[in-house]
Amino acid sequence: MPDTATQTAPQQALADRLARVEERIAAACERAGRSRSEITLVAVTKVFPTDVIRAARAEGLSCFGENRARELRDKAGELPGAFEGGDGKTPVVEWHMVGHLQRNKAKFVARHADVFQALDSPRLADELDKRAAKNDRVLPCLAQVNITGAEQKYGLAPESLHAFLDELASRKHLRVEGLMAMASYTDDDEKVRGQFSRMKELFDTYDAAGNPRVEMKCLSMGMSNDFEIAVEEGATMLRLGSALFGPRPYDD
Image (tube, rainbow, N blue to C red; front, side, top):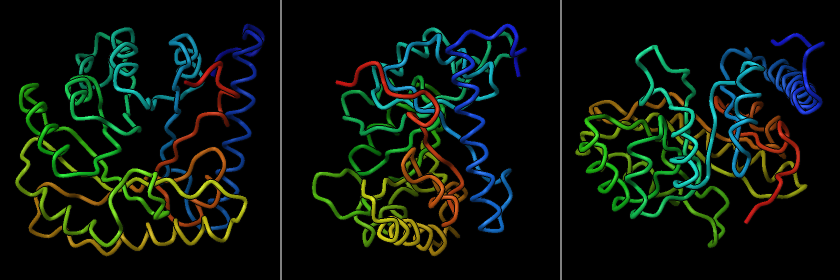
């Protein structure tokens, strides 16, 4: 942690928010009988500039999430991720692409993302597999599930998830490491809890034996409005934006 006597006001605000988030995660872990070490925090920096990311790195955060492929590309140009800057000479962050991806932008994710969290169709898997091969890599992915059932939401239907994972066995340049989902944006905590519980069931019941492209080790669920419930229901990764950085300066 940096010396608080030398921190700027924005840096101190970030440090204070992070401390409150960590207190809430720790309390949720205690309620659920879990260890804080089981959970990875991804700071979602959509529309925030790279100086905010540098400030977050100074506070000990290392995983950052972007919603747009071109924004990921541009920020990774300034702050290379582990795949691009893993030579030990360049400061490294871990870039997560957490938003919906159009196939014509797959090249940006295959080149710059360390983890892609929104794999939701065979056609996208094909394009990413091809692009990852051109970059001589295996791209870690999470399969996105539409756990709310809302038509306007992206993701696989829960009932089709396991068959989709089976189908990925032939994609040699993708590695699925778990699942991602967004719960309904609602004040009904029990509705959210039920959706997260269903995600944990899907996560626990997939049999990856015989599928070399799938290893179920990451369950990414929980955002700024519901992350404590996600922790209680088994999340291993949280994606937090406003809880860490406050309101976005703009969001188009």
